[in-house]
Image (tube, rainbow, N blue to C red):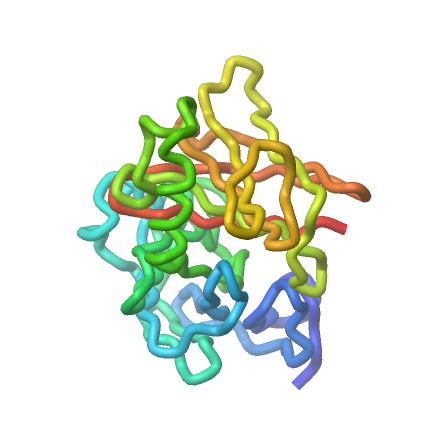
Length: 254
């Protein structure tokens, strides 16, 4: 089987990838799934430790369902991660969903966590593989600690606790998957009401990412865009928030 690094790297077929950062050195070209189906692959990790999570359930559902009824969304694809935290599941036929697909990951000790994993090519048509292969889980203890630290934060407090009242938890990484410090996250919209904070050891601050690379957004607008700016490059992320769900994003900067 030929090696590949991206979906467009296969002449006839598609690239099977289980990790985006660090890159999947074992990625390979595979024939297209039958019946115009979509094959979703990837790895679920703990966001705060980047350790792979075995035995996690992965329910890939329409984005609109995932953000309006996270616990009751009807999955299009469903799998449980293996010992390496990997999932690999193929739909029975074409996947149809407006806007995009969100993977909802769940495991004991972690809050229900959503990660955008695929967007349609056009209309409701999806490619044979998912776009994002790194999925995340956020630890309940971390959420409780961060919410407690922000209770005295006048701007953030009305939107706590995290999870119960939604919120976004992000991890900025370099291409090898290493958390990045010195990064800022800024709303693109000038009159944004979103509040951005950064996890710095046993504190939550309002300046920039620390060694953990973790940031928190509360009260984002509907599909609000943010600029993630590092010392050597930037990226744009889209934040979603829903009660009963932690939305995870993990931008990769050069």
